[in-house]
Length: 227
Length: 165
Image (cartoon, rainbow over all chains, first blue to last red; front, side):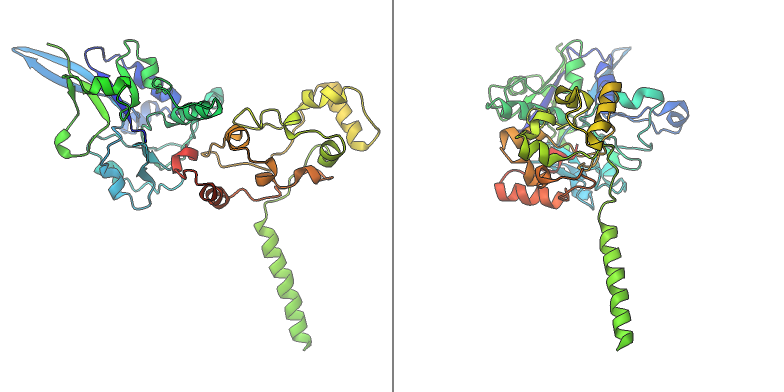
């Protein structure tokens, strides 16, 4: 059984935000516009988390790309009253929009703020709706959504493999954020395959996860910057 | 006695109406297409016209270019044939109405079911190839129950997000 995971190398990441833009495009996220943004209704599936560190008198600000961590022990799943979010057999925390009632318990439960509420009808100005990615649904207004590790790409890779009569290979699935990272800071693959790139990166000395003490067991690993 | 008969007739009318209202509304097709002639008399495969049913995600409904491969000249003088000839001559898109569809958030891959799982088209679509009249509604309801039942029978995963994107 596969266990999908992601490794983000902070030594390579420049905080440029290309991953965020790519995610927005790939997953048909609506644009909030200035008025709604002022009301704090703009949302992203992949956020850039600002962190500050002090070196003597100097303050260093850097940005951590933060997708959904697809926890192995997800707090959001435990609180959902309608089974609209669940942990699937490959470790992806799925969102079933047709089931979601928009109660937002999961948003309150997620310690990483990975879940976002969709305030908008899936509408785009002019001809932009025709440019939507057909592999990803257009969410109705009033549901909670989040990063899915580009699950539609996982499905597509599995389908290609089945049509060709082979197994999914390491590197067959590249989420939009990883694909668009100019410094190739994001690696994605099967954590249960000891030969996969993510497995090898995770066994290195620089690995950490955010708020590991919560026991949520995230499957997004960060590689700390070298000294 | 007469009261009982009248009540029975009224109940039957109301019942039939209620049952009919549960069916999807029939659609209008632009041309009276005859599936049976193409499939049974001429031996066409579904994929001869529904080009991507075995190789793509969506089977696609044939358009005027596909018809024009055989019908570049009218092959008879039936009203439907003459209607098609007008479309072919003008190169005009035929606005077929879809009768089989899944909700917007569901992705159904045809090739996974036809090429990989080797399921016959009739299993979900019904005996379309035996129809003389154009399809005005689906012959089989495409419900999630039928998907899940089939997946359980074949012991393939029923993971929600495999279909609900």
